[in-house]
Structures are given as structure tokens and as C-alpha cells.
Image 1 (cartoon, rainbow, N blue to C red):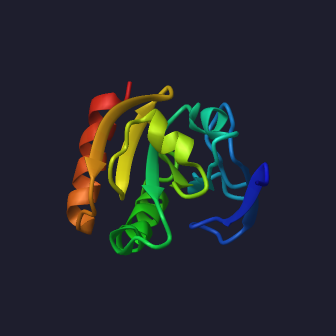
Image 2 (cartoon, helix red, strand yellow; image 1 turned 90 degrees about the vertical axis):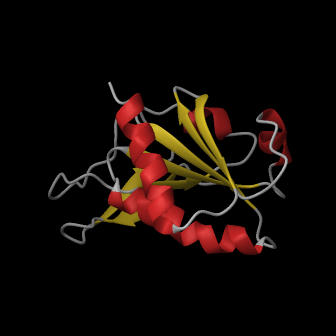
Length: 145
């Protein structure tokens, strides 16, 4: 896994290198707008990636799971819509089963919201877009200091 990814700014279109983990939130080098923070994690780098200054949405999924493929784009859109306030971490449970075991996950898709590496909320199963956003917004309001 790479230590960073390249993301286009939603405001000005400039391409920016975004680290998978950082002490701050990623911002565009040109216009300073918040950048979407979407990363993939494996067992070896998970703890460092979820140690984040913003709320972390962990999407536990598998490529063979139909509901996972349905909710995946909605999760990624939430990461774009909430740039600077939410970090999205995708975990393929076939590649990193130890993460699903760590959280006692019994079915996928499972979405976890983490603050300081600890679970604050969980959603099992695919949600429609409006319900997913409502769940995230509620937890953002509750867990933002």
C-alpha cells in the first residue's frame, strides 16, 4: 500500500498528494479547500490510518458482496461531501480478516464510525443514501468537539 494517493480538488481541480495518515486534515495546495480523504487499509496499517483528527468511517466490504458494491459509491460520496470532517477507510475483509475479527463483525457490509480509534457507532447492512448520510450527520454532530 502506498503512503499517499493523488486526489483532485473538488473546488479548483488541482491534483494533490494526500497522505493515508496525518495529524491534520488534507487541504488543496492551490485553493486550500478541504480534500476528500479516502484510503484503503490492511491489517498492518489500520491502526495508524484510523488515528485521525476527524471522524473515521470504516467500510468493511468484500468484492463478491452485492450490497457492499451497492453502498460503496454512497460511502465514497459521503467522503467527498464531508471533506475535512470525515475520513473514509475501505477495508476488504478478504484481504484483512483480522480487522473484521477485531471488531466482531459477523456480516458485511458493516460500517463503523471511529473517533480516536474507538468505535462510536455501527451500521450493519446497506443503507439508502439519505439514511446513510443522516446516520453520519447525527454522529458528526454528536462527536464533534
